[in-house]
Amino acid sequence: MPRRQPFLTSGTQSALRNVRPRRLATIGAFAIAIVGIQPPAAKAQQSDSATPPAPSTTTRPAPPKDATSSFDVNFGAAITGDYNYRGYTLSDHKPSASTTIEATYNVLFAGVNTASVKMPNLSQLQMTDYAGIRPTFGKLTVEAGVAYYSYPGSAIDISYPEYYVAPTYALTSKLTVGLGAYFAPDYSRTGAWENYNAVQAKYTFDSGLSFSGELGRQGFGTTTATPSSPAYKLPDYTYWNLGFSYAYKAVTFDLRYFATTLSKQSCFLITGTGQPATGSNGCDPAVIATLSWNASLSGLK
Image: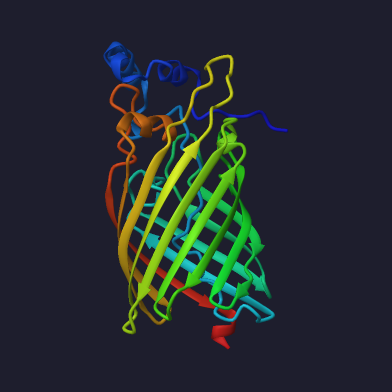
């Protein structure tokens, strides 16, 4: 079994132990020293740290309308102004491109998503392999599965699996509501568990315009102590997004607002980006536009 990798290397972890509101002033000089020894390309994000992985959902194909169909393949591609996942950027507030291919057989599905990212010590390619079941019971669709997040070619290995169940219910032909529960026993190989619970709603008009939103709570456990860093509790937070989408044939334009309750210091603890004294701007509120394309093998016939 690979050795667990912390978010941060020993130098940054030492500073992390002192990140408390009443003690931030005492590490100001140390933070300045860190900045001084970083290469220019690392000034935007901490060079000796790694942002936790997360799945890309911008190109995830929509569940098939006919869940009883035998076999199909769905394709997707997207470009977004900022790859934001559960409230924090995985592309350093820069554009990101992603692709998805997903195969379905009756209620079974499996797929691979790739997305461009920009995070310290990680490659610029994020890969999400996922599989599960998606049965439909009248107006209720229950998706349950596992996703495995990795960054092939990275200097460190923080890959890990996350298990989830996400039912959706069509209240009307236009209004759909959903729940989601996600759990990872070893988040980014830190030893801390991770749990995300959310509610979503989407209303679609006949014109192709839809409004949707999500409200979620992200929780974490305590990391495993290492020789260079003690165990510490990762901060919990609330996350939400709200926006609209317009679909025309296979193309969809989405404009959305993302926000969390994370402070800059708490954002630093979770993402490892920024500086110990000033925290990270990776969790700042953002308005993000996304253009995506989705198609299926059955639709091309």
